[in-house]
Length: 213
Image 1 (tube, rainbow, N blue to C red):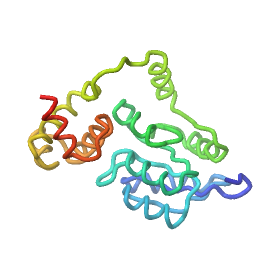
Image 2 (cartoon, rainbow, N blue to C red):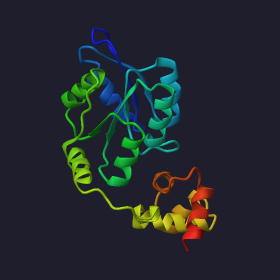
Image 3 (cartoon, one colour):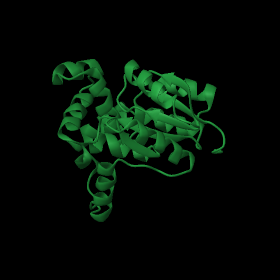
Image 4 (cartoon, helix red, strand yellow):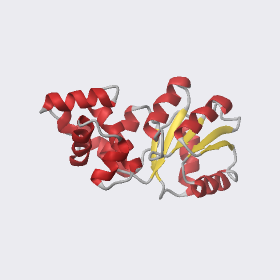
């Protein structure tokens, strides 16, 4: 990416007002051009093919394809693209999978507009920016590496609940109804379960759960 050129930025967030606000703010920043706005991970991939952005601001929790999978697929298409996660979430089961998927920087939506703009410029220079709490979590994990444990031990209590229902062959909607949670939350848990168990699909996850018992 050449800094003398405009940094092409793609916004991927399922909240329209967030996209409008970001586009308005970034539109006033010198050297930054918002080339597209996507309301889902799937649309983000499509627009990335069209605009070939230098930097993507990526939400995490979205209907359909979430930010983790969108990041993974986008970077397979365009390895040079820099994905900056911009989210409200700081919990481990969301943070680590997207970083492992290739996210370059991680910011919270409480960040100031100037901080987001500077993170975009830093990404264009090849420099990562991590929210201070994210950096602290990663340093603690590095200082205190976990001993080898069975993969299922990495699952949260809620993810275990979802896995058990997966093993019974229940759909996302049925799981959502049983656990009284939103289907978007179920999809996110399923994504995390697949990543943590290192399996390709829910069928393999169900087989894992059956063997685990």
